[in-house]
Length: 542
Image: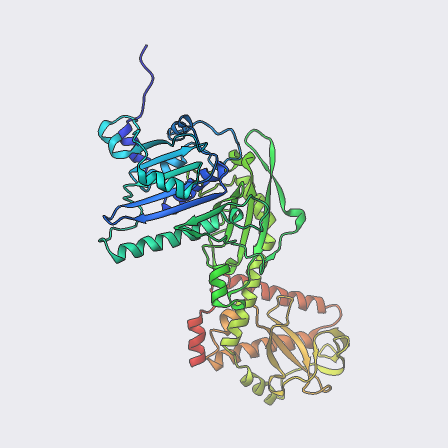
């Protein structure tokens, strides 16, 4: 019988595992996971640039620590499964693959009690390559390492040391100020990542997770909550915030979900937006947490399409526990998650209303801004209509502003009372055509009866500033008086035709026609973007 044991080539595999998709930020987060799993109350990270150009990174925690036997198991590629199913460590690979993605030599130093000697083991990739065997190094703890253990861990805990860090910076620098500045930027970038990924642990007021202090080069990392709850609106009903997810074996477990719409940039100072909101296309979408630790930050995970500006204010908070690990197929570096197609469909149906509301809210606010930046002049249209006496217009018998009704005699030879906006004290220069933000039906235009005083109402037309046609066509045409006037006269003519030919039976039919025209125009313009700020500036300059 042939020997079926087929050990992997040590030299090739240990180097190949360096390229599992980590970067310095995700690698550091994996080390912090282990500290939290070990019950640490504090995690200290020091990034040091030595005088000879070497970069060394220390991760020290005050957790429960390990015996020498436990250190050996932790350093095994594919370590034994942890007894605590909630542990943030999941595959038995994180410490090794995370560390080797950044450096070629890393050590684990630990002890469980003050009277225990420090236990230390080291993986040196160059040694494994040279010997082509899975052999760790059993070097003694150096005086520097002992001092760092005492400083960063205390009497008990665990110290991870990264040395020979050939991938810690994105490029090589000559020793000097530029290299020091690059290390400083790295510490700042890592701080932002840690502040987000572990914000529930860092926030002393968040009772969902126990508090863990994390420091980088001696500075406390503050929590950064991506949902900015003090200013944002949570728009998913409480009854919909728990969903059942089916596991591969047919059983079910609960996941939590909330939907947050952040304030628009217009409603924040630049400083507030940069510190608390950080609005961007990439930041919208799902924020997925496993046992309180952020795994996915942003992106729609195939539930909706690619990120686009109109939904940039929407962030979805999605929570699950270890019970759902098998359902979500987490990757080794714990920075990505996959939804089952059936769950995608369920989430799409649940979130479609808030997705639509986020888009509508963004458009309303953005369009209010664009309306201020680019004023479309309807004055010429009003003068033209006032000077044209022979256009067929319904004759007003009487109006009732309190009930918003008007009685008219029209070309059908009937006197009818219809419900329509009746407006007093209208600017005489916009009596026949005016663009407004008060139309809530979604229609592009609505007939209205308007007066510069409180009597003598004349028929006119109101245009909806929030409709796609006004935003995408009128705004772009603002500099062309003939184009604006042509569109104004066309819509005014439609409104007069409706009023001249309506009766109680036809009134809902004409309203349906307006609804269909408005809806069709919106669909036809769906792929045409809103005018850019540059275009609006050009309109102003013209």
